Image (cartoon, rainbow, N blue to C red; front, side):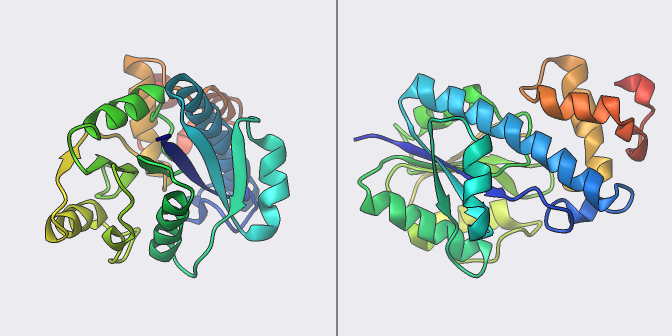
Length: 232
């Protein structure tokens, strides 16, 4: 049975994305920043999907932006509209759709975690040979990737985008009788202060997000984070 990885994405439009970065970013800077982030995430995910033999999907909000995202996504991706009034319901929908299509395992990831590359995807798949659920947590209490060995839409029965969502998800897995494993994790970029984590990642290695790094460099946007640009 073939596995699938699904990227949750938004149209990179001012006022729709990275609103917690405005200010200090302008709405147009935040949208351009997210566009770079999304392109990097889609490329890294496509590389992982091709190497690991995964079906690749990008789920788009709002629905009318599907054509726009299809034009910028690598050709390996199928593009679908997100379905549901909130993130929890959209994730349940995505898992149910994967189950209906006969895909297993199912990986879901966000589009604002620049250091989550093919290696993390491969590690998640290896874990799913032994456990039912795997998550890659973020520093803010959320997670940037979740994998399910077999589809379990009931896992997403609590509020999402909270500071306890990773812990809540693990608690839900336990209540459902599902075994779980937590990866080393990473971070996402929600506020300008979060850029310090990206700066540290570049200091110790080469994050798979060249467009994002170049955009921050060329527009001198590191100044909005709590460190000196010289540290980058």
